[in-house]
Image (cartoon, rainbow, N blue to C red; front, side, top):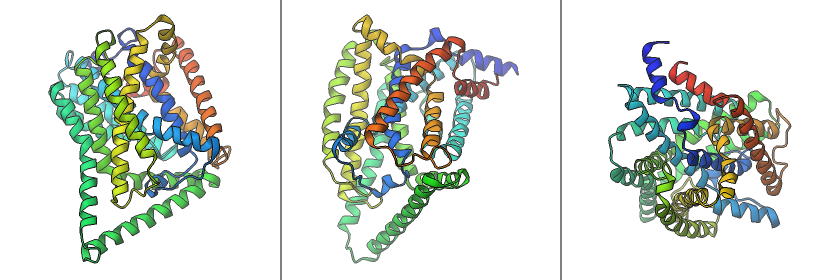
Length: 413
């Protein structure tokens, strides 16, 4: 290992005493929400989300699906992303105090994360989020000297940009003459995209339910590539915006110094929760909508989901921060989630590995067999096991296995 590698490792290594407990608790909590949402996607092709496929649940299954849509969908990936932005500031600020090339060190960290993400998408599950984080995270390097007062403005700009573009496309399409050559070409392109999505979804559905590992891998590659090619600009812009909002929180000490931010958390709870819940309820009342063609319903649904995801996510984070300082009993309960948060990368990958093996045809073949209630109970039980397993692991090791690998590839040791 070179002298530079030694300095890099010293600059950015974080021991347990340096960690911010609230952030680990929030990561541990977000793992539950992510798993609750992913359970349905482990049992269906990812490309069906763009086609607006409507479920046929009834009774308790419908109630659970509705509750997940309102209170969970999009909220926990947003939380994970805000925490990524917060973590970026902590990582970069610690690095620049010790070394001359903190940007290069962060870039190495992103490259390794991207490689892990691609491997996850190809060999385990196409719904990977890590590669998107790695690509979107590159844009953070352009904002390392930006003040907190400007970071949140840039964050809202990047988050609002896809919404604005979708509404502009919707207005343009609906205002144009439907018989015009431009409108007809647009409709033709949309139909081709829908056909492609349907073909990929049908192939993936068959492969996941009864195909060999090779067939499933081909389906994963098809879905991952199609999702990236179709929504890349919207996705990157959204994640960059969320990362920058997280960076703004970190610069202001929000969620990184909980004892001094009680009034702020109360405001975030109200100003995030109220618009977030109303937007989520409004979105839940809309019919299932195809997200391929820019219709008014599609633009409205997308806008409401963005508002609800950010608003409720911030409200959840603020509520946990407030509860952490209330009493010893509440604190002790919340602290049980911290070890899982310290091993968030390992636990996220473990969820995908275990449940794709459980559901896919090359494993136990339970694809499409479980209802919503069974999925929720199974997800909760698995998450509770992860909490205990993480506690046990960190009693014997300093890092989770995937965190250690990420650290090794980043620092060279």
